[in-house]
Length: 159
Image (cartoon, rainbow, N blue to C red; front, side, top):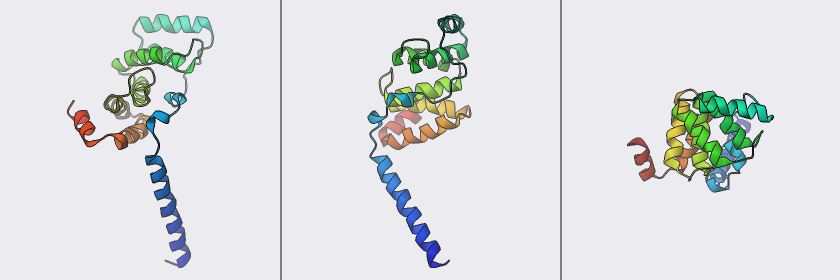
């Protein structure tokens, strides 16, 4: 290995360490509510008739419609922006096994968007979504696990 390679590796190690330190200093409460939106909207809701159709389907128990209605409230598309209502719709879709809704609900618990902040609840929902193959949920799960204290981890794994 020549000296130039060693220098380059030293710079890489330095910047990785610096990034890790900066990341550890980020207060989860400072994450902007816009981070609540994790997945692209499958159907952009902009017209009142679209919202009405989704609401009808959601009230009939359609998990995808519940998720989409949650997205509408989380983004303010076609309805008034309301994180509490978004989280409620995400919770309904999550209970029916919708992985995208589970990921959104988990992140909502982590940042306190429409629900009380709870790292244990965030971990629960993000782990379910990650188990269903949601890559972004897996990434966010790692973030949540880094912020959990040992006692919190025990609570999570002994639910």
